[in-house]
Length: 139
Image 1: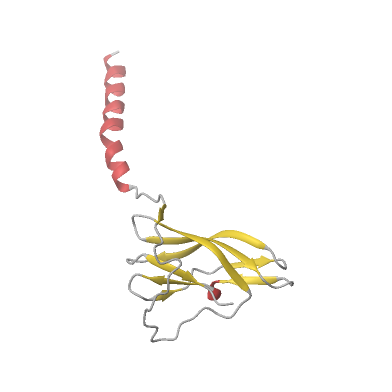
Image 2 (image 1 turned 30 degrees about the vertical axis):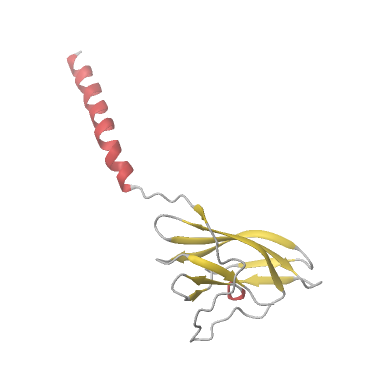
């Protein structure tokens, strides 16, 4: 009987005192929406390397920026294929302008759009110390 109590106490002790350390090892991957004060503004960042989105027939209808506490950067974007034919959206057709004025494409993506189709999707810009100020695409 004492052995059963001892086993139960040991199990309870390990559960109570090891749970906080396990929780501390986990990183919070929750994304939060970020304000986008430069969304409809012109930015005059230097572009010494002449980095621009590839020419395409997509219109960036709207977007929201998300990030994690670890510095992961994401965009939730709505794109419209302005062509009457099928087109493929790829990562080289979109750029993020970051808080240090650098430009960064999203991680690889390939999404088919029918003619005149509008789609909302999430794009991942990876880790960055600087926030995303604005997303741009050429048309």
